[in-house]
Amino acid sequence: MKKLIVSASLAIAGLVAANSVFAQDRPSVGVAEFKNESGAAWWTGGVGWELSGMLSNELSSTGSFRVVERAKLENVLEEQNLAASGRVRSGTGASIGKLTGADYLVMGTVTSYEENTASTGGGISFKGISLGGKKSEAYIAVDVRVVNATTGEVDFSRTVEGRTSGGGVSVGVYRGGFGGSLASEKNTPAGKAIRAVLVEVTDYLSCVMVERNGCEADYAAKERKRRDSNKKGLKLD
Image (tube, rainbow, N blue to C red; front, side, top):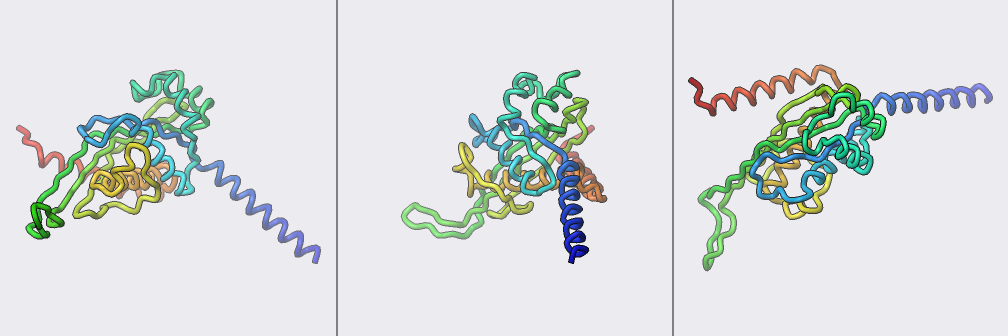
């Protein structure tokens, strides 16, 4: 009986130790306020931090990251002028990491948003009121950079895209919620595109920062496809 108790105790201790090591191995990230360089009509005051919070929740839900709370980030990032510059000044990275507990800072900039509603030829019209017969599509592009809080170097970067078509979401299932200024966009093409891009950002960061199991090649292929698609839309001499 004593041997059984000792064995059980050792097994529990080993499990606790393993979980402790796993927790320490998880990268600690802080998500800075999103910036906007698009003409998106839904972008209003406060949306940048709302998107930051939504991505933070999504990263936390994976169990692969330790996510620093906004309250620990905001004052430090403002002090380092990250809101304006979008980068860590030389020599200040270590202090940011020490003050916030973040190993990395995730920065997102919405660089493009497009929305289109077209008639599908169906639907019902009665006394000037039309129901159905329309197809809404939306596209959003976000430039993501992961800055090493110690060195100030950009360790990972990528342009991530989210699309909706016919009311569906093209990428994954977003597990968070909409609130604040974005609450009214919950069921709109914009809201669905935002969900899609947040899931894609989360999957990308999980791949390159945690899993590192060959999934990087898939994202490299996606990036080549995106760049080739953009080139086709340009007239180059």
